Amino acid sequence: MAVVDFWETLLDFVFPPHCPLCHAYVEERGCWCPQCLAKALQPHRLPLSVPMQAVLADAWAFGVYKGSLRDLIRQLKYQGRRSNLSYINTLLTEAGNLPQVRKMLSGIDFAVPVPLYPKKEKQRGFNQAELIFGDFLSRQHIPVQRLLARTRATRPMYELSERERAVNLNNAFAVTRAEMLAGKKVLLFDDIFTTGATMVECANALMKAGAHAVIGIVLASDHGNKFN
Image (tube, rainbow, N blue to C red; front, side, top):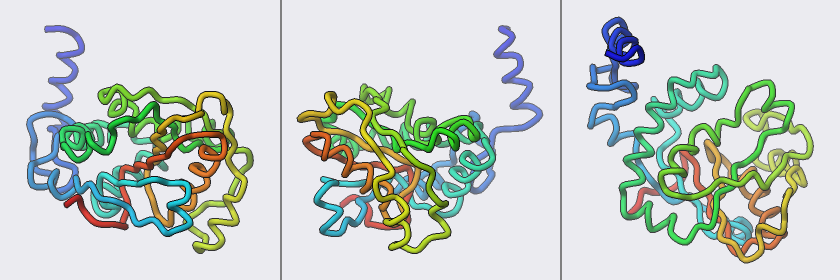
């Protein structure tokens, strides 16, 4: 038995793999039980106001920001619990098999992550959006390009009203290589969508730099309706 296989077997024996929602035992680490996966995986279109639609052609979330999915994101984001990525990858793998999702991703030239301020990313050690969607986008053969930079530190969004969020993010993002965007269909991705202020500011910067269209995706949101 290979060394890696031995330690994985020992880990599964000491800490048996379990579903992140109901904690029932599952066959492999990162798996969900079928019922809980169905609850967590709820792809839905996000509501966009008329001003938002001027820069975002469409926006989608793969799940609802509550319960186990919210916990997985928050633990990854604020506690650095990378082991949660195995559950997220399983969910996104299932999402990638849905014909509606494949249709939504069709024609994308490349994907751009919503950036963190450099000091924040250094402190955290990662951009959570890139960790969440990296493997998924690779499986979809969509290259990732870091074409946005956060040009200044901003206040934490959770403590702000919707209007304050818009002011907080005004002109906070800049395109780094505008020549790559001309006529391109861009997939803009982040971890969550609340008021949409962050995604709209990023999309606005991409469109001003020459992108043909921007489609937004997030792992979770508490807005919108499921696919028909």
